[in-house]
Amino acid sequence: MVKSYDVVVAGAGPAGAAAAAVLAGRGLSVALVDRAEHPRPKLCGGLLTAKSVEALARVFGLSPADLAERGGLFHQTPRYLFLHQGRELLAGAAAEPFRFVDRPDFDALLAGVAVARGAEYLPGRAVEACDAASGLVRLRGGGELAGRFVIGADGANSVTRRALGPGGPGGFDRAAWGRNLAAAIEVELPVGGGPGQFPREVLAPELHVGAPNVPAAGYGWVFPGPRGPKVGICGLRRAERDGRGFAAIFLDFLRLLGVAEPEGVALHGHPLPYGNALARPASGRLILAGDAGGFVEPLFGEGIFYALATGAHAASAALCGLKDGEAAAAVEYGRLLARTVRPELVWSNRLRWLLFGAMRHFGAGPIRGFVKSAPAALAEMVHGRRSFGLLTRKTWEWGEGVGT
Image 1 (cartoon, helix red, strand yellow):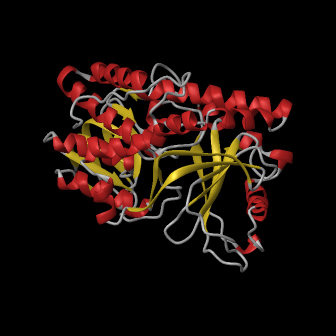
Image 2 (image 1 turned 180 degrees about the vertical axis):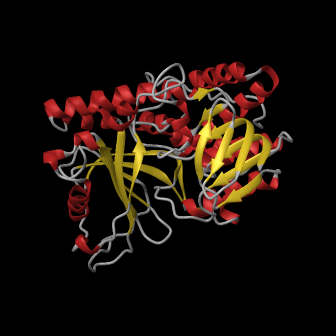
Image 3 (image 1 turned 120 degrees about the vertical axis):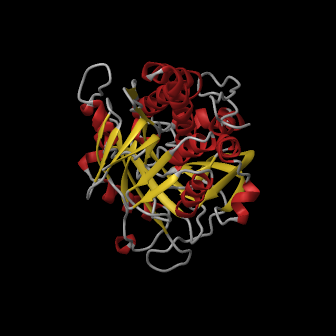
């Protein structure tokens, strides 16, 4: 039996929850499907930039105080630190607060808002297949859902993305996707002096770039965490140094940071879209958002904001399509992306390769000079106050159905 909805949203992370919250808030029938049930584990540093905080207010009506009261916000700091080669500080610019959320609770909160607005939550139902032309979604274990539109927000290993096909106007290059898919490893360590413990408290976010034990086309991070610092690295697989795997690189990174006997630390990895945002993320009745469409900023790897923004944009596009047809949805989605998200991804990708290319030829000097030359402007760029495109002032546009 097929159950029909105005929109089927596959994936109940930030992108899917944003889409479902906008659409259900407009009175549409929405299915929010996820293979797991909230709260579920999610590897993520949990960093919220200023633009993410503003998106939460617009899309979900949530403030930082709301997050704190409901368990999603656990830390904020007024400083953003950039480090090079271990503990050498490149910059420590005063900036707007960087907030940190624990992703299992955070994701559950966002999905709960969508459900409170009227979305039907279907946890533990993995998507097995999706037909972009008909809007039919087949669930593993039986059952089918039909949507006048389907929003695919099912992550980097998206099943709905396969419906685009290998070529043609709605297809995508699978080989290119694989080349630009980063490996990422993250652990949360208790503070202490023993084996597998982090040797100090971490009160402010740190980025590690250009150090010998950090991927050549990537970075390492140390973020405050609810149970201890979150330590991770990410980088393109094709840029692994000396043919070593990421696990070996990561263990060296832990040693560089002073972690004793890191071999006993249980490692957790996941793929990260890292410069492969799809040129055509909408086809037929299918619209891809978040990691499923490759919408992750490719310099610092920020994903939460781009998930929230593209989820909301996908919902606005679906609203347009429900009135004016499938083609109108694709046009509106492309317009919103072109005016907001896509320029940031394009320019940050250019900046990434410029810096990494300079590092290959001239060592760490170029990136040290870049970070030290304008640390405040760089922090504004990360927060979304300035664009990655020539540091111009940035404003963000929101589509139909997204609150103010």
